[in-house]
Image (cartoon, rainbow, N blue to C red; front, side):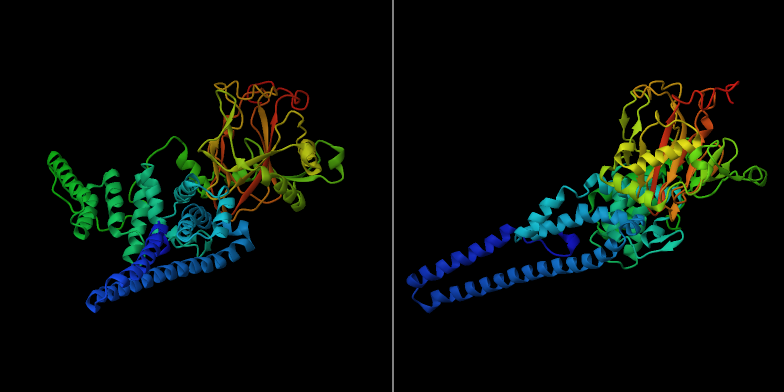
Amino acid sequence: MLSRLGISKVTERDTMRILWALLCCCCCWTTQAEIFTSIAQMTDLIFTEKELVQSLREYIKAEEVKLAAVKSWANKLDDLTRVSTSDPEGYLAHPVNAYKLMKRLNTEWSDLESLVLQNPSEGFISNMSVHRQYFPDEEDETGAAKALMRLQDTYQLDSEAFSRGKLPGMHSNALLTVDDCFDMGKTAYNDADYYHAVLWMQQALKQLDAGEEAVVSKVDILDYLSYSVYQMGDLPRAIELTRRLVAIDSSHQRAGGNLRYFERLLFKQLNELNQAYQPASEEPIQLGTYSRPKDHLPEREAYEALCRGEGLQMNEVRRSRLFCRYQDGYRNPRLLLKPIKEEDEWDSPHIVRYLNMLSDEEIEKIKELAKPRLARATVRDPKTGVLTTANYRVSKSAWLEGDDDPVIDRVNRRIQDITGLAVDTAELLQVANYGVGGQYEPHYDFSRKDEPDAFKRLGTGNRVATFLNYMSDVEAGGATVFPDFGAAIWPRKGTAVFWYNLFKSGEGDYRTRHAACPVLVGSKWVSNKWIHERGQEFRRPCGLTEVD
């Protein structure tokens, strides 16, 4: 562990052993001077003393190296924290910065703690103990690594782009080292995600071959990379990589066994297909070399394309049916003198955006109220109706009541005024913050017929409509997309979008399946109000057909 800090390990036991040797020898000099009276006998003590002086100097050197490492670490963190604390959200807006923060606090600060413990510093350890409860753990670091991979997939970015800080629309000095790339690949490998393991191990190898210094060895990288390539079904390249490994370390038992196995397997396949051996491609492994395995999401490709701004179904005919207008909430007294600006985002299903829905002051107050309560966002289990976390929703959220602050009560009333729907039976205002790789994969806001008990505990019926406030701009990513009809709505601070999840008949509009795309660069803040059926009987009467 301490090798990450670039120093050798000197334990408390080593320190005590040296001091004990010094103490014992001092005692020996006293007693032996009384016993050994000849010069010949005393010469041994001269050499013993020389050896002890050498040991003492080695001990001092080790302490100096340790102190120099701690000073270097402190100087580096001085510069880093000066930048990060000047604009915390801006700093964490870059996904590499967020990942490296997780890694530093989970791994490298622990290494530093171990280093300081060699010669305990009570003040530092006490401080560490107080703050450790707030540190990210292994699961957090793993989650941050997977978030980078999620961004890599959604926005089709190669590992080189991330490693060099080259993200769409920006270039940063937030770089990933060889060891960072190796750890990314190892995270994927441990999750049996060989597709990403290959991409990140290949990047680690590329940077190491370019002369970048690292703690991890080329043997270790080739070991993981060759086996991951084998798991992707590329036997010729797995053989070539394993041969490189064996050429470096001929005694590597696993590599030797793997090489023989890979070669037997390849030649067996060639014989069965009656084909000649073709050496591995000399093209470097990169994004697109191997196909990403399919997962649980049937519309994965369409969803991710929309997140990138591709596959949009907006055309001139549809655009000609979109208008903007002043909305007075059906002659609502509070909006007559100051109607709100309404823009059509989509024609069918009808999605509208409201401009100037929230002021900057209201946004800051909502964020201020939400921050202490933010917790991992949940989804409602369709079978039990109980809220639970899910891997397809990655964000932090908080729920705010109208009694929490006049601002919340005012926002709730404004939503009712604009939509003409009662919010007394709506869910609390939910505030969500999407950080690095934050997303909510395609989902329905309403409950389907196969999950009739989803909102039974609330006793307010199904979610008839969704009102979504955007409380921040997002530099890259973070769109709200509708894969069914190819729409993408981009966050604009202070605006809100609104759509109905149910037809007037109460039947679900399955076209409204939507997703919150991963945030690539930036921090996305939203708040939403899920409006329920109860209380809308006279505000939105039933239609004459199922799809009115």
